[in-house]
Length: 276
Image (cartoon, rainbow, N blue to C red):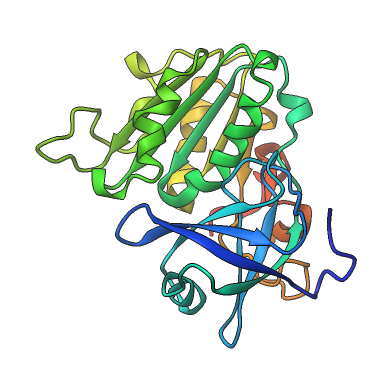
């Protein structure tokens, strides 16, 4: 459900804070009213006296009495959020934007490619896919982080998700440490050869992460044989107001906040500022 007054935030209480990495934390929020969203949609979080910023929920869309947002500390609003604790209140505006088109995914193998904190919206997508797992022949997750200490949702990536039948999970890091036993290299390294056996001709791929990672992951997927209309991107980097008024998130003729943030690559591939 979406509030009729999209400019007026509802109140939500912070009920949990989990530190994922030195700069990333996941916040559990309980809204005053049930809050429904679809995987890929985003919300505006408002910190009283500081400002607001857009974030994509990282929790299951099936849960309406609470939601999780995973936040990297990179600016004024995120810094304020990282200083908040249980019992404090924030404003919640949304849901906003277009979700992942699950109706186009059903019956197909789904490859999820994430980088850094970009795994947050993909986590919500994964929960949505797992809720109807029999609709997908196979679900593949390929994720890259800078170091082992920078891996988000590490408990799930190395634990619970690996035990799910039909779900194939692999993580790489740019730089390993003495304890790291997995692949070392950027995420495109695990999108080929022994690391990936995928139904390239009929499957779909979904990508989210830093712009440079999304660019080279998309180029790799095209090289593998995924066609542009079967590659879906979460184009969230420059969103601000969330309702198409500020113009910060223009991609060619589109506004990421209103026409996305989920786009199939064929819709935006010819615009010169796709990766800006």
